[in-house]
Structure formats: C-alpha cells, structure tokens
Image (cartoon, rainbow over all chains, first blue to last red):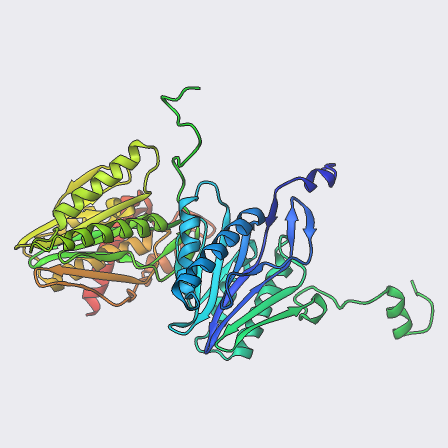
Length: 237
Length: 265
C-alpha cells in the first residue's frame, strides 16, 4: 500500500481508454477520452487517441500506447504507398484490412484494440472494429477500451440507425463522458473527429462542458466562492 | 539452449483465443446437409458481437461452420479462397468437393498443431457432390471425424444426445430444421455463450442457401420455475428432478419445450 508513485512512472504506458466510432447518415464520428496512464500515474492527461491515417480515414487507439502507435505508423506508411499506386484515396475497407493484417500476424506480441473509421466515395461512412487477436468486424457502431465495459448497456438502449450528425455527436460525447465517470483508466477531455464527404472536423469538449452524472457535484474555483455567494456570514457549525 | 523442445525467437506459440464463437451443429438429411450456428462473438464472458456469420460457402459444393477464435476462422476463409481460386484456374471441369476440403483443412490444422501454433477453431464441413452427401469435423489439434451428425463445443454434450435419439436417414427439410432448432434452443438455455440469433444453412446438389438471421422462442412458463421454493420458503433446494444432473436437465428442458410447443400448436 506504501508503494511510491515513482515506481509507476516506468511501467508500460497503457491507454486504459474509452474509444467509440459511430456511423450516421452521411459519415462517421470517432470519439475518445484523453488519459494515458503508466500504472496508477496519469502520464498524459490530454492525449490524442484519434490518429490520422489518410485524409479520409482515422483510427481510435486503445491498449498499449506503444503498440497502437507503431501499428498506426506502419499502416499510414502502407496506405500512403497504396494511394500513390492506386491514384485515388484509399478506401476505409483497405485501411481496416491493413490494420487487421498487422494485428493478426503479430497477435502474440501486440496488445492493442483499434477502431477504424472513415468515409470513401464507394461505401460512404464505415466503421470497423479490430479487437485483440485481429478479428475484423464491420459495425454500425463500435466501442472499445477499458471504459467500453460500462457502455454496452447504454448503447443497446440509446443507439438508433440513421441519426443526424448532431444526434450522433451528442451520443458519442455523452457515452465517453459516462465511461469517464466510472472507469478510473479513462479521463480528461472528450475528443471527437467527424469524417464525411465534405472533409474532417475535430472537436474538443473539456470536462466543464460535460453534463454531471449521479453523485457528481458542480465545480467551483474555491469554497470561498460558495460561502460568499450563499450568505455573507461566516461559517456556521 | 534446448532447441529440440522449444523454438528460438518466439515467433508464434500456442496462443489463447480472444473473440470466440460457440457451437455449430450439422446433420445429413434426405436431400443434403443442414447446418446451424448462432451469430455470437464472445470476448471472455462478454457477448461482444451479435452479428458474426459463422457459416460460409466454400466453392460450389461445400459449407463450412466454425467455432473458436474468429480471427483464425477469417484467416482460414482466406486460405480456402486461395484453394478454390487455384482449383478454378485449372479450368478442367473438376471442382473440389466437401471431402477434399475436409482433408485439406485437416492437414492445415494438424500441421499447425505440430508447430505449437494452432488455429484455435473447431470446424464442420458439409456438402453434396455427385449425389454423395458428406459431413465431417476437424478440431484445432487435427482430430477429424466423418458422421451423419456432428457438432462442436457444447453441441457435443447437449445436441448430439438428442441427435442420437432422433436423427434418421430420411429426414425431410422441415423435420431437419425442427430437429436443429430443438438442439439450438437447448444450447440457448444451457450454454452461457449462446446468443438468440441464429442462421441455418442448407446445401444440396442444387446449391447452397444460408437463412436470414432469426431468433427462437423460449419457454419459461413451468410451475416449477414460477415458485421454486414453495412449501420450503428460504430453501435453495429447487425441484429435485430438474437439478440432479445437468445432462438430465438438458434432456428434460428439450422434452419440456417439445411438449410445450406441440401442446400449444
């Protein structure tokens, strides 16, 4: 119990994480929290887990930070060459299958779960989930990371096909926020990336813009603000 | 370094499964083969995916069903794609039948097992070629069988006893489907990784069809279920007949649902 925090600093960087990808009528929205932990210490409280592969394909990374970064670097490299050879933007399916190849063929060494999302002119918005082991599953929405355990029931109830962009964005932000509330390994801000025929938009939702859930209280600068606001008298017993 | 018993440079060694499918059942019937599997992909105890297709066509004459690690099944399908492609490229009018596909897969599974790098699946191959019906299974270590009815995983314990009692050579399509559904319903009650969304595939000389996904009705309206501790409030001893052993329960479950269904039909 008396382990000092410095012993965690050298533990492997892991993204206990919440990652989400949803399709809507027109494209996809990827969402994630921003906490990277080494043991119990938060190494980065504002990480960006939504990484670009091409102009039209992004991935959400979870699990080992090192493993997911190297996979995304390799796939970006291969996709770049593929785009040059193909003469047009790569499809989401190709990107997802490249990730699958790396994940499957190195299944004994890698510990990363990835959600691939993007838009191409053939299939529109698509989401592919690639969990541990290298299975590839195309889904209307995908959730991953340690925080996703708390979201299975939520999505079973809240997910609807054919949402608008605004509905989908609100759903993603709400979901990541709920997961952050219960998963110690998820936290920080909520980042979203929207991809459609028009391009890519990044959004950023810091903690104070998120709704409060059960047993959470409003944030203040100081106790003094509360005391001064309610009554100018000194504290009572 | 003992290189006889362990290989240098941990390439790939016996792994563990992550995303898994549960039982597959296959039976021969009058016109060909019927196979059933649910659409669940479990991640440990979580039912993570509920639309995984575990029954797939192979070439013109065969059908494969898989349980176990889904990523390894996806890889097997790629191997089979290549196998069928090369077979077609011969352009000689011949095509690989289910017996050949079964043999190929047996070799693949056994050789991987020998390298301590198995494909973590149990497979069922079925098909009809030139009027001959064929149904076989291969396990992750290369154990292979050929029989009138086969199953993987839990199906071996829950479905095959039912099939041993009720399977006949001359089952019609309707009887075959009902028999498979009886087995699948039993698995749904008693297999924790089962999911109520399944597909049934039929392969005959004419061709193959995989049904759309559908769900089975289940039966819970038994007096013994409604008030299990009546007469002994606070006790944990439920109906003795139901719980003396799991095999009996499964069989009782199956016969109760048979009675319930036929009683109300």
